[in-house]
Length: 167
Image (cartoon, rainbow, N blue to C red; front, side, top):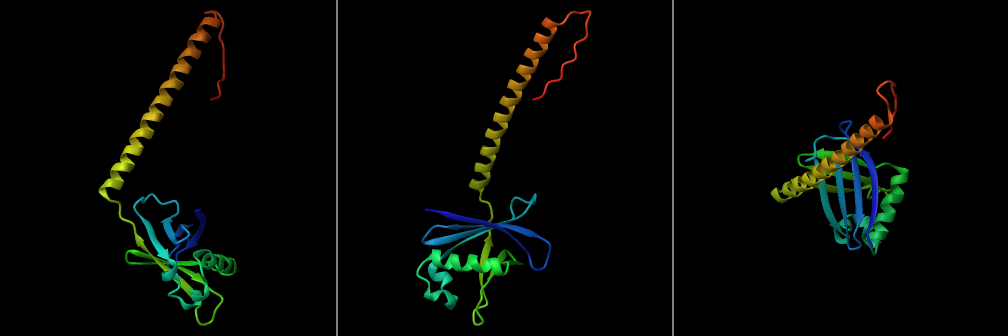
């Protein structure tokens, strides 16, 4: 069963705010991040981490599962907000821990570069959405024309009819 946690963090050296999503796949976690409210659709970061990778920070060596590690990380988020640092093509997400020897754990996310296949899929999705919107507009225009003809049928040439339509 997948578990997902969404939150926002601010980058250390700028005012950029990132939307972060951590997906617990039970044997690993996937962390995704993107700049909030950005028009730059290509600025996405992602990486998958196993329990063994998390346990490289010795603080987590005593934990038996990804769930236990995430519970600890998420509880510490309530005490001190995580941070982000952009370096080259990596976004480091830093979670602070209540430990003197291991004060934090950092996850380096790689910039996700769209492949040709990703662009094709996105293009197909946009085409389908565009067709659906065209069909909706066509149906709405038909309804408007039907209403106009109904109004003409009801009204006489001598009287003026004002009708407000909410749609």
